Length: 458
Ligand code: NDP
Image (cartoon, rainbow, N blue to C red; front, side, top):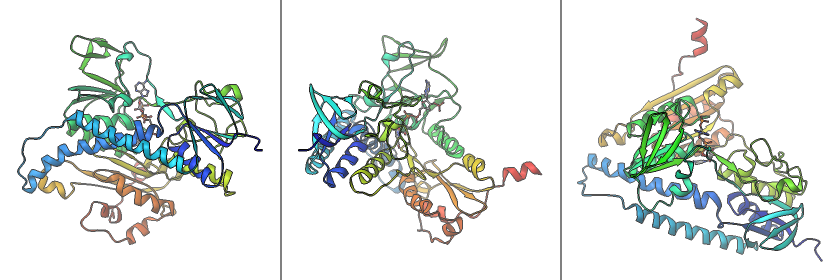
């Protein structure tokens, strides 16, 4: 008889947990997965998928307007927000069903409820105890809000995805991925949007040109940015909410949405009690094999706070299953991970920023272009595209590709392959472009920007 009820017990059925569990089961492991909310996790139910559906909806606002420049006669149009949310919910139900079926078809046992570690090999859920040889923690993260007076009146992206009606006045606090994405959605849908950021620019960590360029494009769309300000308190009024950014300076709003980062879900699952160490940010500390300080317990995805992106969690989950159940040891690879921000216009990047390149590689060549896309010659829209390449002068290798503009995520995904292969600028130059496209600019950039270091030496 088997020593344990399961070979693998995964806590959390989000992107990383599901991917690792299915892959492990495909190699014959007896797998159980526990989920306390709904199978699918943040990406499918509260993040990437519903957000992107709302981004699609938002894009129509400008598409309709742009069509006029191409001869289309436009009739009356307005957004039925309630119908959009219903349609989005139907799609999420469908995906939730698909995820459940995928797990069942792979032979994974799904357990509904909140799991808690009792010892390294024992998990309690719904009053029952299960034993497993190996445990994967994949419990993800949750929005984290500062404790200021009135914070209970604020919502997060979780609730923003389920609003029954479109708010007229929205205040968004934060300047990261989620904040700029929702600023774009609400603005295009017709709300007035004020974004409050404590820094001077949005999107910390992205290339400086990207940050500046997107900020300017968002301003053109009417998003009001209040930089260098901190919300002090939020008050309920007869007509909505009042957001104090300084004593005496307040913004009136119907909805205040906080997007001030996410915290790993590590509370109340028995981690520290069984000896799983957490880092300073309360994320699970793991080694390069995703192993925690307890040898039979592993962790993948946002709960480890490495790179908090769905495809990375999936990669970590699958790498672990390959290592443990297919005699195919794979360390998750976190180099040159592309990412996108579905702002309006979108941003996408792969590789490192110009500032990082200067710090880590010394001599760097930078190529940058900004232009009005062909579509807007007829639409008349004042929207531009920015593209940038960061190149190591010594080796000619392309270290970073950055773009702000329509289709940036679709374009950068292809360039991520080139970077993974170690492509040089010369190889970019040797690549024939697709004409007419915006993407071709990435293989036709000729002129380097003046070198600020050489200038400083003059
Ligand atoms: P981010 O970490 O991206 O950004 C947090 C923002 O909140 C920053 O602008 C930060 O400001 C600000 N902030 C933090 N604390 C405070 C505070 N106390 N008061 C005021 N402002 C504060 O977090 P998000 O919530 O936007 O997203 C979480 C993660 O989810 C992302 O890091 C990303 O990995 C993932 N994600 C990915 C998406 C994608 O791939 N498209 C989409 C959405 C999320 P400052 O810059 O000054 O520190």
